[in-house]
Length: 72
Image (cartoon, rainbow, N blue to C red; front, side):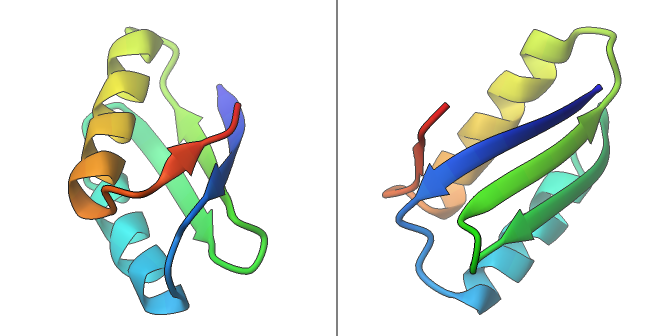
């Protein structure tokens, strides 16, 4: 299942790269792309327990970038 999330307050391209690396290591995430320029996160996640995977993605983002806001 592929999801695209608009985000706000991602500070720099280096932060986006580090966040992408952390999200790609999460269980249930097949692939993650974080775009600083577009201010979006594109996730390809397994359908099983998708809500749990999305919760862990949000928690990881907030831990790494506390000011990050998900717009959708």
